[in-house]
Structure formats: structure tokens, C-alpha cells
Length: 417
Ligand SMILES: [Zn+2]
Image (cartoon, rainbow, N blue to C red; front, side, top):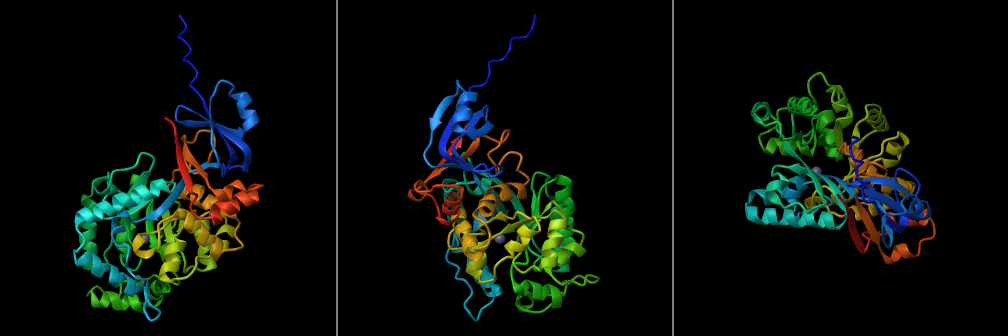
């Protein structure tokens, strides 16, 4: 006897004045068809209503678009929103000193830290962030209850600038269960031995390795000449052993340093990349590395502006991250897009929107499920609306409003399955 034909899944059709798939052109009067938790098709409202005549119809105002991706955040620092940026006569290291002082004085209780992280995660969810890459020492599962739509990937951050610290950190790495993904902090705080061990481990466990790279000129000064504020900072903490640059590595920049350590590949997510040469941008592109820019944090700390035009020219589509509230005014990805528009007037709003969605999903190796509205992607995406969006006439005006207008007044999640 032939087996019964399973009933076709119920299709829901979401109609909206605008659909921004990212992977294909913007659709005016568009629709997204979903069933069984996945996107079935994206197209014009008229075509889709014929194709899915029996579908359950939902009419939306405004715009349908993929969820945003915050590819660099430290949720556990959400309780430290008042660390002042360095003054004119201060350096990046002074800001690190302030942060360490506040964290070490212990006035903020673990409960307050968890409460602030919970609130921040909820804010991220409410403002349209679907995927987050959270870096820190406290897993978000023990800090916060996850709102239903937010997908948080956590990387345990490890560092150690001396031989003794390296020995201890390598022992800790060896004892970590495979369920814990770990990553190095930065080149100025972590020996090449630790970074290499974590990269090998990340490759074995097939997770992304993310670290702060070329965030400030002070970092480059340390890598090039073993001088500058980072040297003083390490000296005052009894942690200066001249491990930078590594003997045998004639380093000109942070990316070149990583290249000579043999660490540049598609499994590496380089965060910040402000102080990089065009040669290094090309190197990142050739090796297929992932890049995450944090323009709000860079502006707050006064470390400069990443060469986004060069990155796009070399076919890199960076992700966007907010970094923590200790080094940013707010952790709002819509504001990060606005800052990119201000800092890079020559970059098109289309590319900036793609960075905040597809760029982030690709940086987290999740582009098969998220980052675009396309058949096969998960049926979870955004419906946003605002007064500003009502007046738009075409794709150009729409993307200008989405990337330059700040956080939309209405943000709603479409979730099925
Ligand atoms: Zn960071």
C-alpha cells in the first residue's frame, strides 16, 4: 500500500510595503512566504499571492528585513556604563586602567552584573539584534535569561602576557571541556603561544576565533617597537617581558603579526581593524578572514576610523559590533550604522545594511540560516516601521532612512516554527 502523502505545510505570507532581502534587490510591495520554520520564497506581493493562494496572509506596515547581528559585545561589562573616555592628554591605556579599577574595587555585586547583562540582552533583542557574539568570562547562560529570538554565541576570553601566565593559561586551556569555546583577548595582552594554542583548539572544535586587532595606534607601537603606553602599562603590572614582537617576527602591523604567526584564515574574526595598512586589508581579504568594525566604540575612545572603503574595495564585507557599554555611548546597531554613514559618506547605505545583517551572519558562520531573506533561511526576521519610512519613494531613499535614521520607532519580530 502506498504511504499516505503528508499534508502540505501551512504557508504564511507576510506582505509589506517594502522587503529588504539583502541577497537580492529591495522589493516594493513585497512578500515573504514561510512554512515549517523556514523561508519558502521572497518576491512581489502579486506573484506570491498567486503562488501561495491558500496561504494565511499577514499584512505588515513598514519594512521586512533580516535580523541584525552584533558580532562583538561583552555582556558582562553592561554594569560599567560610566567609564569616561580618555581625555586629550590621556591614552587608550588610561581607559583600560579606569575600567580595571572599577572592576577590581568590587563595589558592583555579581547580582548587579547579572541584572545589567540581562537588561542589555533584552535591549539588544528589542532593538532588532538576532545574533550576538558575546566575549567574556561569565557565560550569558549564568548571567541572563535569553529572550526567545536572540541567539547568543559565547566565547570565553583568555589572556596572559608573560611566560608564567602562558603556562597557567595553557594548563587551563588543556582542562577546558570541549563544550566551552575559548578565544584570546588581544595581541597586546596575550602571548603568541596562547593565541596559537587557542587557534588550534578553535580549528579542532570548529568555532570562530575572535580577538581585538589593531584597535589603537598604541597597540601598533608595542608590536613594532616594544614601546608606548602598553609597555608602561605592562611594566607597572609586573608583566613586561618583551614578548612583543615575538623573536623571529619582524612585525610592521597587527595583521602582519598574525600573518607571520600563521593564524590568518577564514576561522579568524579580527575585531576593530582601525590601525591597518592597505597591504594588511588585502592580506585579510586574501586569507578569507572575517572582520568586525565597532565604529561607536572607536569614536568613543578616539582611536580613529577603520578603512572601510579599502575593505569593501578588496571584497571584504565586515560585520558590525558595539563592543561593551564601557566603551560606547549606547549599544544600538542602528546608531552604529548611522556612525558609519557619517564616517564614510562614500559608502553606500546598501553596503552598510548588508554589513549589519549578512556581514555579521557570515562572521559568525551562520549565513546559511540568517543574514538574508532567502529560501531556506530560518523564519525569524524583523518588521520595522517609523514615520521616516512612510515618506520613502524608492530603494535608495529606503536604505538611506534605514541606515541613517537611527532606531525605528516600531520593531517587531516575525517568528515561526
Ligand atoms: Zn571588545
